[in-house]
Length: 383
Image 1 (cartoon, rainbow, N blue to C red):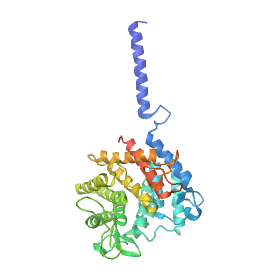
Image 2: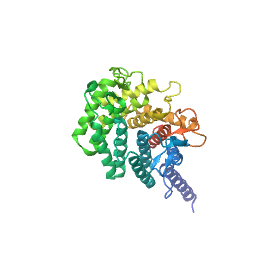
Image 3: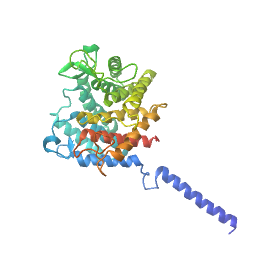
Image 4: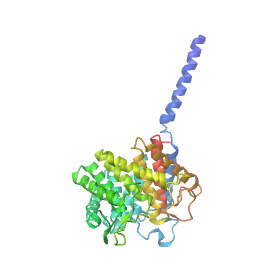
């Protein structure tokens, strides 16, 4: 064999080996599955911990806290937390297509309905909007008509919350129809716009536009993009301008995003960017980039709402999306490095320090949602 042929053969082997390495890096070894990504692995770990630490198979629901202390596990019935639990399961299902999660989502659906006396509606319009959003998404991903039917049942009831007190808007709850707030209106825009996208009924688009117009006119600072919380809470017509929650910013970003998706009107993109820029410039710590600790209870879920919709907007926004995605990844890195319990994936209300002994479902869900959003950004090439 000539020296030339030996050199050529050695070069060919080296080239083939290099090509195999490149294929493995991008897709995984043949038959061995895709190469695992860091945040996807962490998201799996967080999802497993949510299951092991909080799931109650007898009731078909997640417990309020872990570890359980007497009745704190089951009372009160945190309906809207469980809607976000469904969304967290759907995040993981969308990423992994694990059939076991399909079954778990169905069990949660039945468990919530059983606990709610066999119906889906309750006395709080914002709660029902979250539940409707979760089941509409379940219908899109899983295709089971029961999820569609639940979402539409809820939407019918939600529309009844609109009245002309305070110039329009959907009430926060049925026992206080003159109190209007962002939690009851911005998610309704998201829901109506998504219903329009899925089913094509122009009436739903008109609802989305009408509610959004009221929300922006009434509860958004035109100068800064800060989303105020509510109006007329105490019956005096005052706006709660001092209630500055990550939740409110997140749902308004989501509302603007959904209307931009279905209308392509630039004003909605501008609105989403303005509020997202407010979050980056004012709500996130200038020193660390971390989002604030908003306490336990319902407050433990607020950041989870923001990071979901900020991530969804980041992947759609070509100019500013990189900065928004960076904020999400910064918070996820801090949570994973400093904000969990030892080697477990249990999360408290601070994303910079470990939780107390008892972890509430609300803060656990925010952490799980954050890690799933980081996995999504990683998959799409964000750094």
